[in-house]
Amino acid sequence: MPVLPELAQIQFEGFNRFIHERLLEELESFPKIEDTDKEVEFRVISGQYQLTQPSIEERDAAYQCVTYSSDSYVPA
Image (cartoon, rainbow, N blue to C red; front, side, top):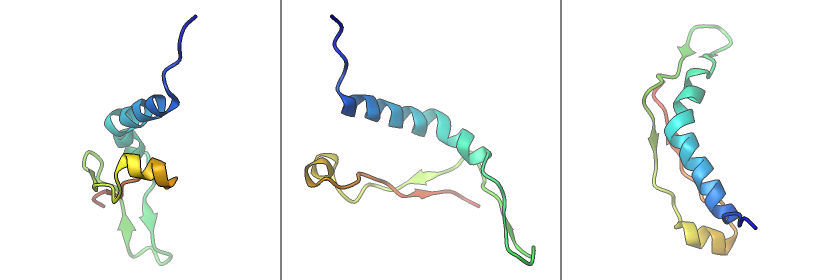
C-alpha cells in the first residue's frame, strides 16, 4: 500500500514550484494600473522580484497557528 507524503511537504513543494517556476508568469500577466485621470500608469517589470525574510520561523508559525509569509517587492 503506497504511503502519501506529509501534507506539509506537499504544500512546501508546491510553494517552491510556484516561486521558482510560476511567479514570473503571474507577474507578466498582471494588468497595468492607471489612475482615474489616466495621468499615471504603472506596469510590472517582470523578471525581477524580491522576497523578504519572513518575520517568524516556520516551526514557530506552525506552533502559534499563524501564517508563515514573506512580502514581495516587484519593480513597477
